[in-house]
Length: 223
Image (tube, rainbow, N blue to C red; front, side, top):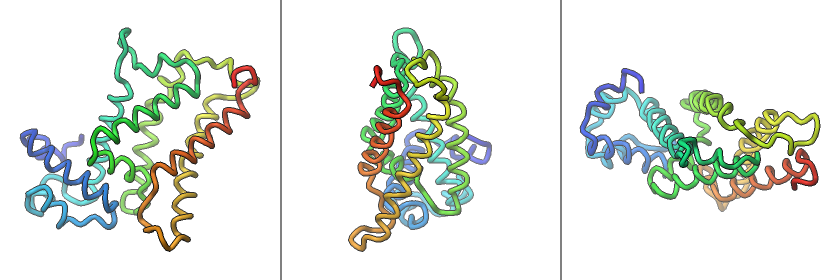
């Protein structure tokens, strides 16, 4: 983390976790825009002045949490096997490896309830205060992962002329599209709160996109 968070980093671990969990719970429940600093400091048991001393702003606090969860997720995905390499690399099929990474990320969401709620909502945050920064973090993380992801993959399973890296980019766009589609559907349904996103519905739609992409880009004998 960057230097502006040094005062927070120097706190004892128990207090740090209390402050982090407060953010996970409040942002996870209400999203960035509707999350109240008053609720956060009450949950964390600190003053507003202390929160801003540690993070300077609500925006910085949210982005710190996002980076924090991203790093934990990275370590979970990179959990090593007997050879010291990330276990997901044991899967040499493109789509099996992709699904393994997805399952590991979902596992974190369920193992840590407060953090899980934050993970489910934060990547899809549309507030203009943090949207650009979230996209930049996502792009940086994706860039760091892409070389590892393609290591020792069974590229021959793709149809001739298909670029697997472009397929991965297409899947990334489908992920964003699934979120946008569910959000749009929610907006026209008066029975659904507009700031809520059905995480399971997004995953189901994403899985359908991936299945369709596999059918069109893999050689028939590998379907």
